[in-house]
Length: 464
Image 1 (cartoon, rainbow, N blue to C red):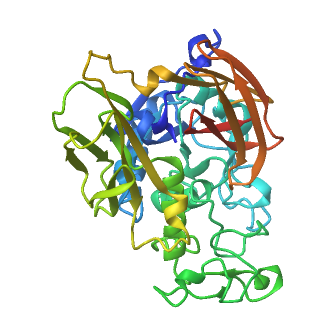
Image 2 (image 1 turned 45 degrees about the vertical axis):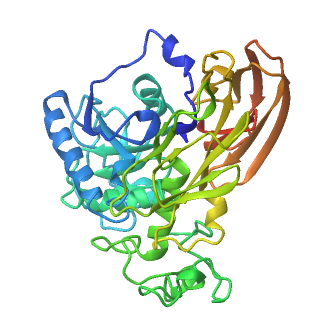
């Protein structure tokens, strides 16, 4: 959640001389990359003469994505960028090795493309995967746009194909937008296919449990077509169940079902706080008179808006359902506290304890000093956090400084929220502290939660 702090990505300042830099186009821009979920679309199999086609293909996918709920409602949370990666050949590999079709289903091709994408991956004709996933894609992102949140590889092929995983991959087929939205359901929403595509375990929309009292989607049962439906009629698929009969995770050209919609919204909440700006900045505020004080929470717009803001002064309710207040400081002596709580109250959510999981609290401490003028000292000057490198291999460094002696706590979680490690270290006040931590042996996304001086920062890391 980039909105809570400004990480200094040091490897950006020391790129290797061999770094491959490509032109970047902005397709959709709604705000600072530190306060938005950044989708980066990478060109694959587009030659230099075809880059204008890539931009057109990427723009069409972006436009169609934000017509589909819940991305439509939360579209202001996102930026979209297109990275013009140039390939030597046009198209993608098709070795003709699939076993689910009569090969060659399409002409056999050996294309010289940047990420070496191929059809027939895993002997499935439509399974389109960049074979240089672990090296080339991470390297290109590190050299060109390391603050990505979602990555899509757009392959210049008219053949139907795609895949999920760490990155979504989609071909430039006429159904590219629907394929892309489905694959983002995997890559961003952590959703499973709602048809039988192999054993990927329990997900928000896939289970072996048929007990309506404790099934994963019990809060949605008998609403909007949600039930308990077998994924397949026989074999292993008959042991697994899906929540809906007409979800895009089962077949294209459908909406996300209520269960999948909720899961995606929660992923949006995990990736980005709903607040665009605070006025004044949170932290200690020093006042020298009793002039009225104004506080405002500017939200990232949602259409329709479902985010509620409530205000408290000295922990007592002060105002409800408004984004700003004006406060008379006269009744308070020396020091008092103003708090705003922010929560998405969308009817698209039926998450138990949501007010604990995604209730955001912002605090201002006001200190009176009428005898002399005190220069305001924002929180940013009291606490500084840097984490690098990202992506990482085995180790990360947390560089932190604070004016007061304190303890720093680091918690590392898997992408699914499983706690891997907890570290606690004392830091020396007034100087920069470089602390090294070994990452858990988990490939892909790792969430780092840092607690320092009572404040919490969260950063998404990628472990190679």
